[in-house]
Length: 159
Image 1 (cartoon, rainbow, N blue to C red):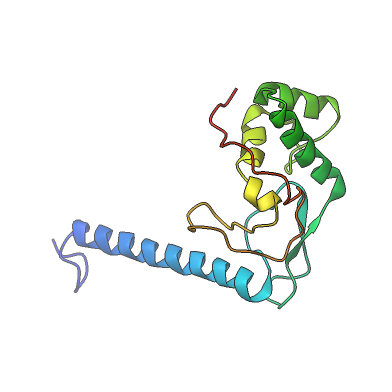
Image 2: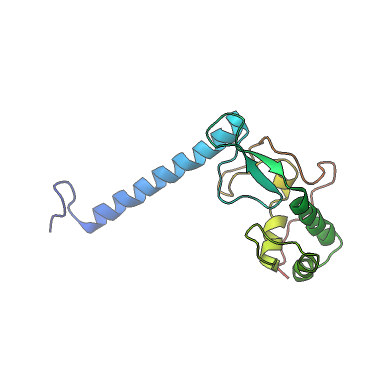
């Protein structure tokens, strides 16, 4: 059965759709990387705990990340407690007890704590846009954590 004048089968159509998806993903990643390199702006989802985008996207110098001090306190507390060897569950409990909330306004769980810990380089001022982009792209955002402190060990536990 012929689906269109140029498509012989469903398999050909599926292969073309998969190729097009890969092309779009590559363009999107490249555009995000270039946005940071050229303008120091970030064009990603809902935001990162401790920061908010300022200005409008697409304008040079706009869309830069500004520190939200209350959220930055939570980030610093997470790293300080982890350096003391406190578990992710207990860190989440302490954050909730002190009234901190996630970017979405929910209570912290060990999963959100782990996500913050996995963004250590970002919180030290190195702008990593997405996990799929190799290395980091330095952006124009202030570090929430001191760059002088040594980077912590890779987080392997989830409890």
